[in-house]
Structures are given as structure tokens and as C-alpha cells.
Length: 230
Image 1: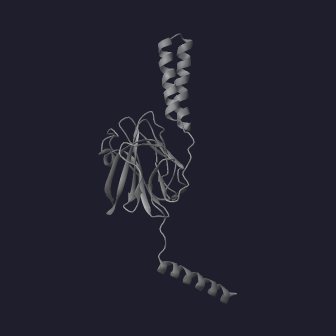
Image 2 (image 1 turned 30 degrees about the vertical axis):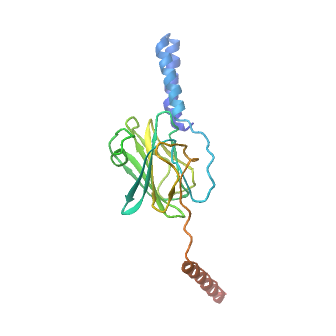
Image 3 (image 1 turned 180 degrees about the horizontal axis):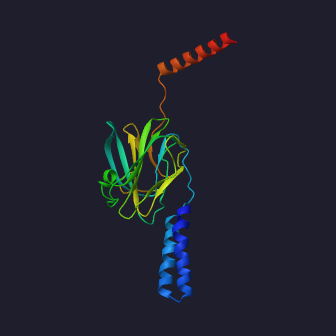
């Protein structure tokens, strides 16, 4: 369980105990049930992270509600949106290994996370991730009940595929955008698990023959220069 679970759950549990001692039975039951719900909501199970090269994993648990073609900053690509219900695990994970080159918090509305407009209009954290295959984008999006998007990472940090990066409290949505070259492996309505379900395959770029020749030439020139200095 993440630390936020203790912040919200322990006070409810304490109030429940106090209500029980005061013989306020119904209040005690309600408070204890709320504490159990909070502890469950903030659970953080371990996941087996796929080692397959080029795998893009789901940032969160939930159901795929959108699979569509979409441009990002003029680049053609594909977007996958995943709705997280209140009973899902809400810890978010990095969909791929790379460096967070940009992280932007966008204040906004709190529309139901199932709605298409939520991807644009709701409060969200937008991560731009530079990977070996290229640049991709993923978002943490608040929903109707969720009122806080939380990131545990900062711009410039390197993350591993499936690494925990934050959470959204009480019902939310995550979006993943990849360029058109990526091969999508999920369908609308499919249930996915954060960190372990593979959404797409996007292998690292293989340098062209000219690029490899240039790299070899540069390396030989560097060795030659070092030899002359010695």
C-alpha cells in the first residue's frame, strides 16, 4: 500500500474505534468500512514487468475505453485511453523506459473520466517520454470523483518500464499516445493491468547503413586523435 493510504485510512480507523468505545455502533461500522475501502484503494501490488524489447505497457489498471488515431503537436499517431474505476489499483506506472523530457500540470475540469472530453478538459499531468524508439506521451487524468493527480517523478528523471510514477485519487483515467509506427496490441473494451499488460509494440530504431558508417568513422577519428595526443 502507498503512504497515502495510511494518511486517509488510519484516521477513519481511529474514529471508528472511538465510536465503538462510545457505543455508537452504526457509526463505528460505517467508519471502519470506509477505512477498509481506503486501504484497498491505495493498495500497491507487485507486477511482473515484460522484458520484451519494444513493449509499451499500460500505465494503469482498468478498461480500454478509447483507441483512436490522433495527432500530437502535428505528429500522426494513436491514442489509447484507459478508465480506472474506484475498485482498480490507482498507482500509475511508466509505459516505457526513458527520460521524462517534459512534465506539465494542466488544471481543468472534473468531468466523468469515461467521457471523451476528459482527455482534453480535465485536470491532468502530461508526461513527454524520450525512449530508444522515439518520443511518446502519457497522461494522468483526474475524473469526476478524483480531485488530485499526484506525480512522484520530475522533469529530467530517467524511468524504467513499469516503474511507479504516481497515482490519481478515487477514480480516474490514463492516456497513452504513440506515433503511427507503433503496433497496437489491445482492443476497445479490454481490461488491462498497470505495468504488466502490453498495449503496443514499438521497437527501438535501427541506425541506417549511412548512420552506422558515420558512427564508425567518428569513432575511428576519435581513436586517431587520441593516439596523436599520446
